[in-house]
Length: 363
View 1 (cartoon, one colour):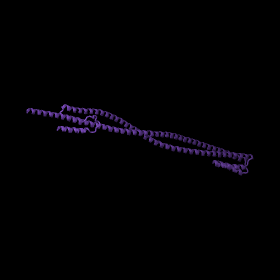
View 2 (cartoon, helix red, strand yellow):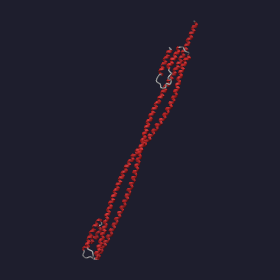
View 3 (tube, one colour):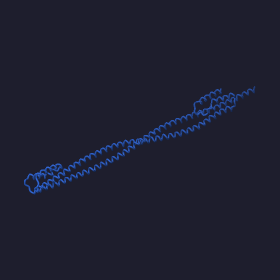
View 4 (cartoon, one colour):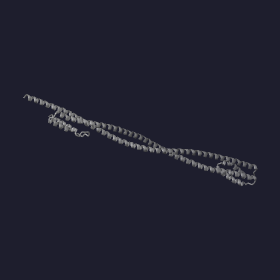
């Protein structure tokens, strides 16, 4: 009866040990074979040591397999720890590079937007300054043209005064004509309007009219008119000089304004060049850091996947090791139970034989 129970127990263990196990290093070891061998020796009444040796050999085989598995497991643990350390470093490096390159990329993009806005402002300021310069140049040209014309008017006025003085001198000498005085008076009147000095010409024009309407005149009258002409000439000379000085001041102011606008344009041009250089640098910065960020992202994803795969594989190794180790412990426990059962069986047989001998001897 105990033999049948032993066979059932062995079969159940053999079924559990036959489960799929990639760390089954001893292909020749079989709990079923051991069971059959033990059963055969029991049937043939083999010595106890012979049966126990079969079980001891099986135990040694299990222990040897566990030692080999322990060695391989330690190698696997070392490789897993090394891979975990390596992938952890690679992932962290990729994260750091991605973080830094992304931060630098954001800085470059923000700086590019700001530099672009500054460039637009610079272009608008340059346009305004050039427009202002063109307006100043046009005004200066118009003023120069006006001064040139006004200067000719002053010269015409002085020439008319000189001509009137000559006619007056001729009249004084008896060779002149009052008709000439009338003609030159018209010229002087016209030039007075041109130079806007009619008030200064009014006394001499009145004196000419009085002189022309008088049939009798003396040297005193001519000398008085001549004095008026000299005074008028001095006044017109002074007005002409004042106008020339005013024009010179205007030219100086124009040159100063032109120089200041030119300096502004030069500053804006230098600023535009610096901004363009900065934009070129920022475009390069954006391209470089975009490429670095993309590479780091790919490295991060790739190493994270490899790390996850390695972690899963190492977890599988750990589970398989635990499963196989537990299975061998069960085998060793079963062998110990078998040894006890065999020893108990032999002890029972010896007791039965001893009782049989006593009964025979009593008969």
